[in-house]
Image (cartoon, rainbow, N blue to C red; front, side, top):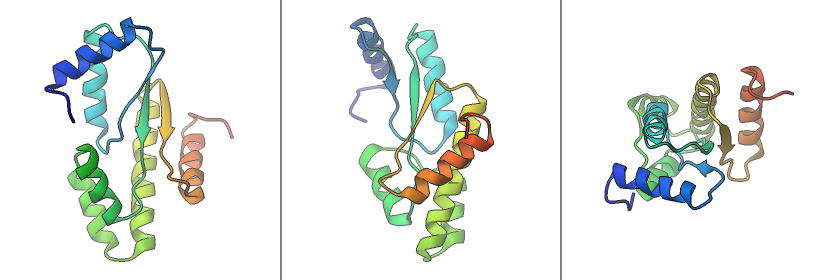
Length: 142
């Protein structure tokens, strides 16, 4: 968010690699296409170290709104539609967020990411659901 441009961000990552970084971890995001464009830019810049993807399942409308404003992550319309469908019910909002994150994780695993990091925010139900999704798609063994 604080970088002057996307290109400057990529240049800084290349400098970190050249200075000896072993791997990168992304900021959280809700649209995998953003990551795929980022990964392609890294390849073009000859960044060869592994990139671990950071995914945070949202658990409430309030939480995802705060995250978007704090880190600048965009919220895709398909996420907004899920939140609207969940209404004001806290359990439905959490379920919508965890289900969406699991879909993201399955897609990322199928598209050969170097690693996945789940920001579960100390919520065992979130950790369990994401683990099950990754076992189901073959990314992890049970």
